[in-house]
Image 1: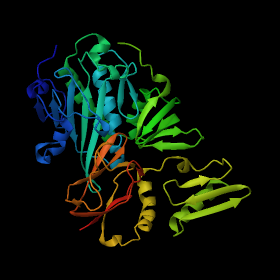
Image 2 (image 1 turned 60 degrees about the horizontal axis):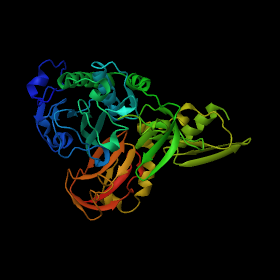
Image 3 (image 1 turned 90 degrees about the horizontal axis):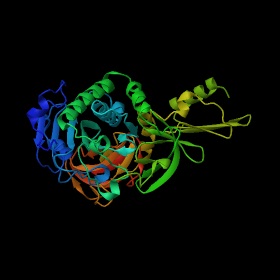
Image 4 (image 1 turned 90 degrees about the vertical axis):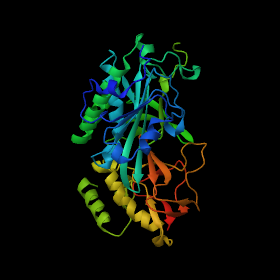
Length: 271
Length: 157
């Protein structure tokens, strides 16, 4: 078991990155690593700074949905990024983060993970992680991006209402996972994906992401703030938006919302 | 209607002060408007130039959003400071469906006060005020899509 708190020096020892994870703030308990990351002054938080906590008392996902996690069993961290590329590429950071999680996990477990638009990572159809990206704009100027990542690593139990859609790496593999090794892998992969996005045309990253997506051509339901609609997924455009065909045959680019694959829902699968 | 002709039309409209043009020729109809959806075709599914079928790239949306925005703010917005959306996405006035809005008309804001969130690709973009003052107008409804450069708030110093 990896029940010991992850300390700064444990991460640095064996870390193979240039910048990501080189400045670390680690906590036993924190309200939220993203909130802390937002509050840090720039001079104390260079590019690639991470904030890691064993427990979040106010962990949250999109739209402030609560993110609950067993203490000392998972990975909860945020990374601060000052993008050196144009704004259009910033919108592809969710894809870069999802791919980095796949890279990091696949190095440890022999799975081919799948991605769902824009940043879900799935093992056999269930979510093993949550990614919450937040950016801070001063007027039209982007100041920083915070990528909040939660990975279900060694958590055994999930609330009844989540069992059909959430799992942990341990639940899927039957073995305890070395959280430190996984974290260092993910940090290296995040740095690689960031550089890939920064220095190469976006197609490089998107092409790899698309190879991990199995929803092209399938029927999906898109949930937006106060309504939902059905569509057929066609493609992901270069700006990261989801290109879908609506029931009347027209095409639409989707920039926000939750996507559910229609035939994927099987509530009583296991557990 | 050949592609060259359509391209010429597009250039013509782009350079002119005209915002919209509609033509019908031999049963084929074409309408060009200076909005993010650059062209919409009529009854014939005539192949259109490539850029027409593609989602507008953000930079193009920026240019095309400008005329609309100056039109919208014909009110005495000159003396008001405009807070614009830095990206294409969905506009949220509150952090979660059950929360109160970040700001309302009449709210006093400082430089750095969070005004709203614009979400795109699950990237939650907090838009902060870049000046101190009072919110005099909220121009977009909660949960509605916004374009790059679209005015979201008017702030009075």
